[in-house]
Amino acid sequence: MVAANQVLLVGNDSGFRHTIAAQLRKLLDETPLVCTPDGLRQYVGPSTDGLILLVAASSADTDSVRSVLQELQLWNFPPRVVLLESAAANLGTALGPLEPRLADRRLWRDNPRELLGVLREHAGRSHAFHDPVTAAPRERLRWRVLNSVPSLATLLETLEIATLHDIPLLLTGEHGAGKSFLAKLIHDHSSRASHRFVSISCQSMPGQLIAGELFGYGKGAFTSSEVGRPGKLALAGQGTLVLDEIDCLPIEHQANLLRVLETGEFEPIGSDETAICGARIMATSTQSLEACVDRGTFRQDLYYRLNVLVAPVPPLRERPHDIEPLVRLLVARFAVKFGKEILRIDPTTFEALRDYDWPGNVRQLEHVLQQAVLLSQGPELLVKNPGPISNHRCPSALSYRPATGALEQSRLAAERLSILRALETNQYCRSRAAEALGISRVTLYKKMREFGLLSRPVRPRPKTIAGA
Image (cartoon, rainbow, N blue to C red; front, side, top):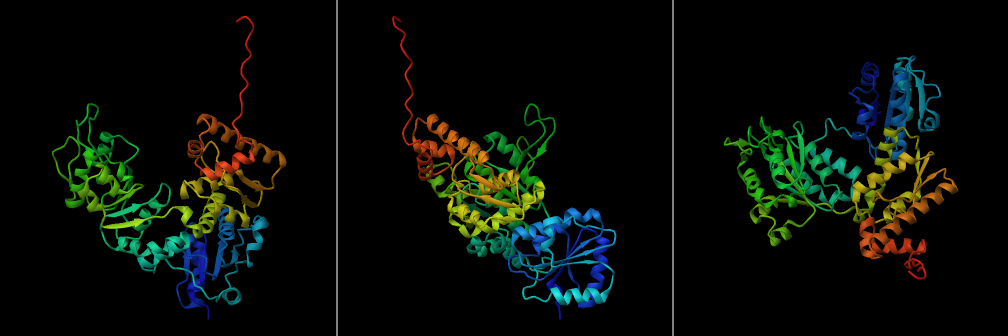
């Protein structure tokens, strides 16, 4: 007997979905799992191997059908897919090279016996789909973490505590390591998920401006302020407010923030009225706040108030097991977004990306893969030797299939020029040049040797004109 959670009905047209779901309910004696193409990732993972009934009500569903098949192909997930088309769909050969991803393709005749035959032939496999509707918040959180960033399983206990209790949370780690992702993940699985998620950067604005953004200001607080304006503390409402790079918050405003954490009270700039912050506050930091306290740039009492629950996020170079799921997720997302017919990722790509040290962490990986997908020219994506850095401070040694010799030569020439300019700008100081390029000294040395740049070029002296 096929279990309801081993069948997932996916489609955009709600009427067509409802018709097929009604038949499934009769056949399975249970309500089947149903989602739209956009919600597919919430149900499927690396281990789910049930049956996806992908439905197309009309030719307008062609793009969504293609997107689902392409994402499943790139994610390398095991579910079998059967396409059910209405008579009006007429997709014909529109699926092209994605057709082999289908286990079966049927014209929908509203025939229970035929549908039962499809279920018996293709469903009934061992690992059921995840159901985010009935799963407990803790289970949903665990699902998201293990399927997206498996190396962060060590943080699961801390993340689960953070979702259950309204206490300050401090996320520490390098730029781009995933602190904001985890903050949003905690918000989405907490009791405040239905309220706003607001973030403010404490690094990008000067002192007085950050105070106005955070606390708001009253009418007439500044020369040009004819009306008051609420700050992020008020705009977050009963949701979550993330103070990004809190180590950069000027010390003159830290006492006011400490008061918010302890009592919830604050006054907008230029106002005598006390406001109440009902939001849950999280903070991120790239620096050790304890070291900031020692330097006198961060209040000790505020540090103690924030240090209740700490989640240290490791850099990507220490999480090699996250590379493949992140690459598959990001390539699938960008391929669909940019309409690129990428169907495979060369296996050597994962090895090359795992070997790179990623100074910009997940944010840099995302930028590199977006660039790679945009420039792709074939069904297979290949990224190799991601060490060299372009003027945009991200890996530029990207190769695609098919590739031409002229394209490769142009890439190497541009790469050599970027390294040469960095060396000249920094008087051939390798440490500064490597820092400017965003790579390690070891990587810079290897590329200098490859391009014949180990010796500083001798510039010819201008000739002296006799008698001058």
